[in-house]
Image 1: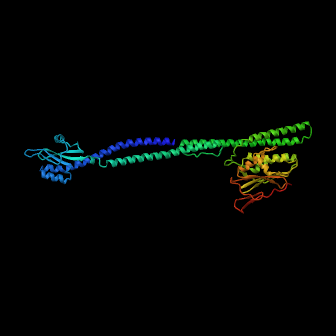
Image 2 (image 1 turned 180 degrees about the vertical axis):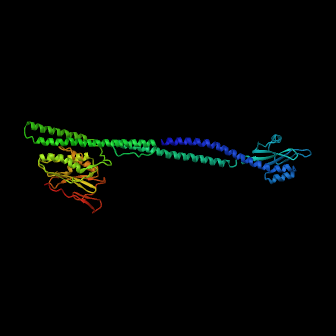
Image 3 (image 1 turned 60 degrees about the vertical axis):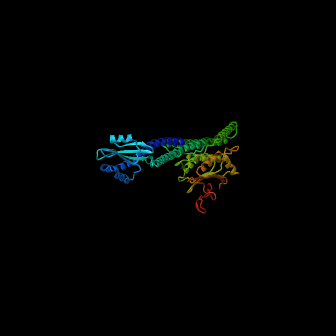
Length: 467
């Protein structure tokens, strides 16, 4: 499109330049001719007063010589009475042309060898008509014409080059937004969900960019909704399944109890299979948009109200800390609820009845820490557990719980760590960055440090022991 625009502009400008340059060149030629013959008329007019006074040859020769044009001027005086005809200078015009001018009494020009002549009639005191002949060479007619045409051609060429340059710049302004639109479409097709197109260029391309960006936002929103649906689905399936498994374990012995436990185990296996299948095509993580977020304290209170009822049935001691005041985090409510349910479900699944657990929320200046700890046997290999959380599930574990937690933390620039809790079991620490920057350096467990050495912003103490 860029070169097409340049070609069109080149053709149009060339036609316009030719349309103006050719007539202008002819006008310049006529002006040069008129200038030459105007000079000849002035020379002829300089001799006319002398002719009206005298026809003496000697006096006329002095007048012609004083005019400085004796080489190109001739004077033809007809015979009158006793006076003979007088011819001064070189005659170049034909006798018939001179006779015609004398008879008509009007000035005329005629072509001669090497140029043209101006025949100017002058009335004498005797009543006769003399003719002054002024020779105008061709070089005088074309004097300065070549330079004028060259200047005209240069101006025309400059106009053509300038128009092509302007058309090229305009073409770039039109083509570049179109190229960016194509590149953005390719990037979005390759899965780069952050691809957007600058809204610039002509109005049509700006509208196309607006439509593309709107479409990309819709795609991102659909993927975000899909992620929330997957997290909600895992929450809806995992949580009641954990309760069902625990209730089935308390049924005692007997064929019905065994069948129930077998059915629960089969159902759990089917859920694990569904989860693994859903994770095979893991979509890109889409960060929460501006204004997204939730109150972590409220979500923790809500989920702990659910799990506390089940903990009471199993004789587990529960402690919640740091939820007495609002704690805003840049995480969707459904994502945080899914992460908490995943971790608490693991506590009920992998620890025996009566094992205590705790959830602590620590609010810092630039980060929020959520600690989920228990008094169980702990995790012998935390690195292997985190590896399962990155997609390498093993038998008996899909790794979905830690994967949900890891995605939640990393979407804010934070991370997840597994260690030993003060309760004697496992402690999972979720570090949620509040400003979306790169994860800051951490000191000992529970400390929040900035990147400036020695500058301690806030320190979170270890969780207190359960009562």
